Image (cartoon, rainbow, N blue to C red; front, side):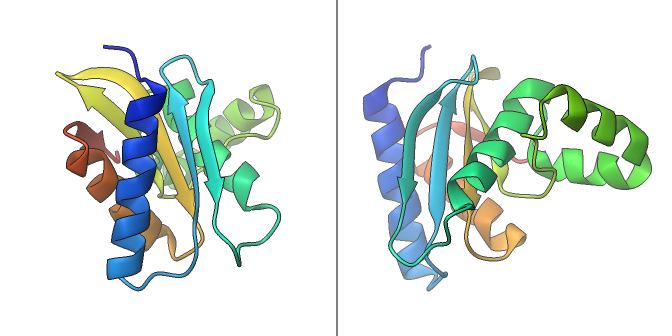
Length: 141
């Protein structure tokens, strides 16, 4: 399956609903397809100017390595030189903290969601909830 714009919109809407219900701080959401291309980027009012790059970096890292960003975070603690080298190869665009979640359909990676704005754990919970509410499997790592 290909990640469509309609699907990306559904994921973003579900993330905004979760954020509101969970009373999280305003968030920025990046939805990327399996090739790492941005399908949708949304920055809520009240978020800082760097948040779009952070959200993209969480999702981009997940797609680029085929791992949810929580796993990349753990790997950064165990193998900091490896993650630093990969981030250098990625032009500094990899953000190795929770909140970048792979979107799977029948096990196949069809995209990733990156969320930032609250704590990394809350960002991740929001992404997982949004992906699952849209009928897909969430892989946070």
